[in-house]
Image (tube, rainbow, N blue to C red):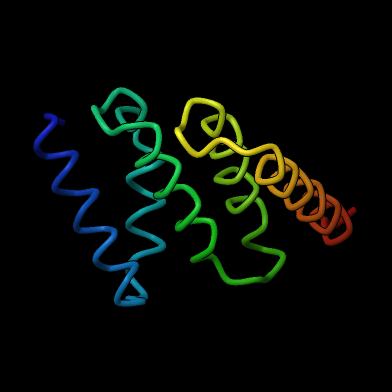
Length: 110
């Protein structure tokens, strides 16, 4: 994927997010899971925004917690590389990851 293609896809996904389109979550998650996502020329801020928006797009139900935790962990890893790094935001992300992981563990079948 070229730089222009990645940026165009990113902008398209954010447009879908703003419009609250149902297709945003699955399309964004597919883009994020693509192995070239981290090697695209998207800035850390853009990657962080997309990861957070994707995590927010997942329904708040246990079967989606695994994907949500994955997005939040990747966003937390990117946060120190962004311009808007904040200790409180990092703490909030960590707490949300722990909460979701705990709930996911509760709902896992034995």
